[in-house]
Image 1 (cartoon, rainbow, N blue to C red):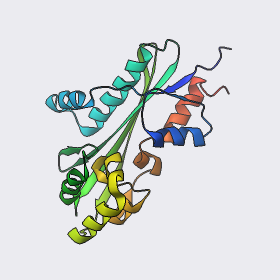
Image 2 (image 1 turned 90 degrees about the vertical axis):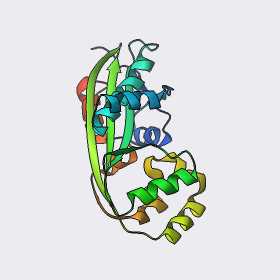
Image 3 (image 1 turned 180 degrees about the vertical axis):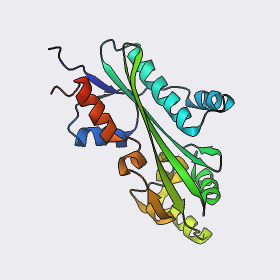
Length: 201
């Protein structure tokens, strides 16, 4: 039987790394450092959905690392927030976060998490999962207090708020998998890794 391939996560996300480590997955971290804005603009020009755009980015990250890590199994992941036809990135600063959150206020939004597995330059598995979230009609005074308390943390998540922290207070309803919301739908990924023999079982 062939030995399980080494696993590499093509992401700078500490949250994704923690999810894998907590699940008992031994993985190396090698961020891809792509021009993500250019890939997103290409996806928008091609009129792709936010889900397809996230998957294109996840695959591109994994492909980049695969080119210099032969035989390793590379996991790429990306997350996209979509609301009213608009795609949201991580805010540049607190002012950007404030603008984003005011737009998202009282609206339904879709949080897309995409994962791709690549080996030797070939995409061998992909998945997309989507969570639906409804933001409550919060006041601007609450928003300003949140931005003051959260500080630069608002720049670490798409849209500007972490649901696993103070950001949960913005929401009135959520439908979807918690790990998808964190940025890595772990259950389908674990199923793939078991089937592929990448867990050494």
